[in-house]
Structure formats: structure tokens, C-alpha cells
Length: 128
Image 1 (tube, rainbow, N blue to C red):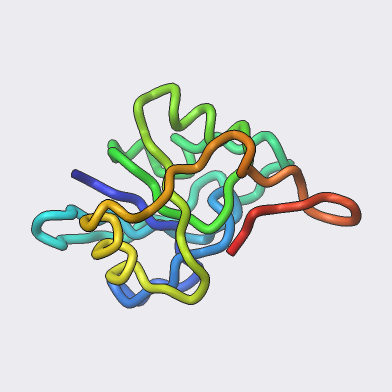
Image 2 (image 1 turned 45 degrees about the vertical axis):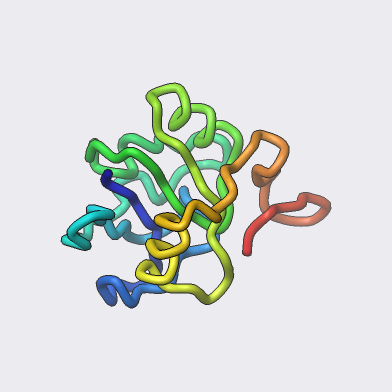
């Protein structure tokens, strides 16, 4: 399976998983069996909240799952509608650490009730 990990800085498998899908500068795309990976830039990074185009953000790469600290409901629904599952990451953990957790089956899948409601005063997020 191919997994996408939003990251702020490209350090390969040692990259720290980012706290929010839509505003991540880059994505590390990893094969969970071989650990082969490549990095792509988020081509939809600068969008209004709720207007994320997650497939454009992923550069139209075909992935099976995303692991991230936080995500908006629109992006979650769009990803799920094309069969991409979204799992919750943990603060300060690397892509490699998350891969191990994913392979053990311990990462929780995001539900619509877990999504980010917006940024700013009075809005709550489930970011790590």
C-alpha cells in the first residue's frame, strides 16, 4: 500500500508528520512493504479553509491512506469518497514511527467528528 504523510520539512522517513493536511508544505509518499519513498510539494497549500482539494494537494498521486495530525471535514470526505482512508498521527512522531504503528494496526481512523472546524478564535481543531 502507498501511504501519504503530510510533512513540514523533507527529512525522508525521519520527517515529522505535520499537524494539518491542507497546509502541509510537502508529502512523503511511502510504500508500506518496501519503505521506498518520494516527496512531493503540496500543490494546493494556499487555499481558504474548507476549500482544500486533497487530490490536487497530493499531486494526483494514487495513495491508499493518509496519516496526519489534523484535517478538515471537506478534505476528509473528499479523500474517503475515492477510497482513501485517513488515520490520526501523533505529535512529534516521524513518518517511520507512524509506518510501524500503521503496520501494527493501532492508528485510529479519522471520523467526521474528529475534523478541524477552522483556525482562529473560537474554532477547535483536533491537531496533534
